[in-house]
Length: 297
Image 1 (tube, rainbow, N blue to C red):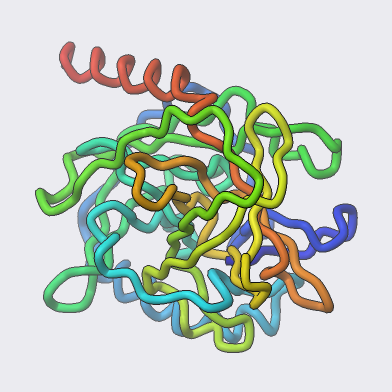
Image 2 (cartoon, rainbow, N blue to C red):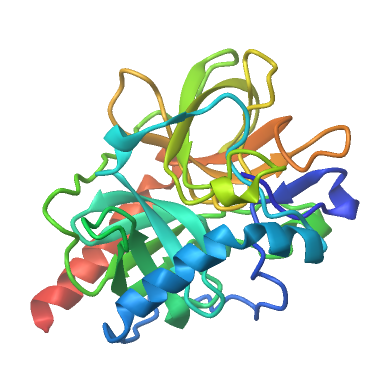
């Protein structure tokens, strides 16, 4: 998980992707309806695979690297029922998202800045192509500020995506943690689809998991994480929106949104995330609104 180097913020950055250059400002409506055609989804899936395979070229030509979940991680197929990819179909750039309902995905707000082009992808078809699923609505937290880094203000970088149809039956919704705080030194688990090695961009598109430790907080909802072994595990591009769990406890604790690197690296020094519990009221209000809309259709 990594993102572009922000000269105004040291080496701190969002987990931006190679295709985020020139994106338009976010539409801030609570829910943006649109129709995603199912036609040519297999063609798009093949395109995504080519983009993942071609991230090395993007990394060499873009002003920021195309890297992702780095350090001593492991592949985590057991998490596949809970985690998906959030794809911008304009350039096939992608983030990570968590299944919190049969047709609901929680991710980072900066991943859905072009709502009409967002699809959900899960790379687990028998034919190896994966499946794209069309979306119906996107809701961005009203506290999200796209220019937060430049203005030095807090931003609630969270968004919900509603699919046009329920996810396949093998997906399992994750509950929302009710923990309003985490403890310094607490161990958490971070899972995402980002690249595993900044020098090997073709490693992206595989779901991986690694252990991180709470190093600090910015009340009331931000938490800073780092590799407890000091081996450079952290988030990068493709892992924006990635879930952070508390081992042995139910529910998603936080959503990964930023990364920081050292010694010329774009990631691996620290990962910043937004706690979920302080925003459960907003999440539940959106879900209730969408449920009412579904009943009236």
